[in-house]
Image (tube, rainbow, N blue to C red; front, side, top):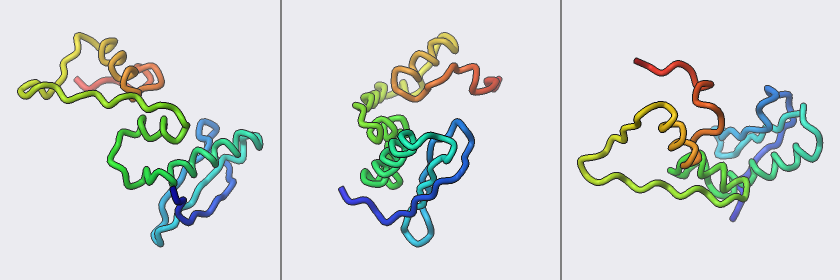
Length: 120
């Protein structure tokens, strides 16, 4: 896998963000690493961000949870199969059932209550 041209910048980001990669207009990428973290965490974060570039994640049509697992070296969760024809919308008995489903497919990493108030 080839890693595209990129620039690495160490800057202060919000403490919850270890790093982020942004495509530039000229086809290169800017990789921002959080200066608030120690050297080891910064190195791991840079490796993670470069793995996204090596795997062409910016141009892949795949769930973000799957791309994050791949960039972290973890086995990605299997993509759930489509429901049978005529049953395209999944229904859940409650928010807890929905939360369990989202966790199982790797799309939720915090309590569903922290996502905000559901629309009614």
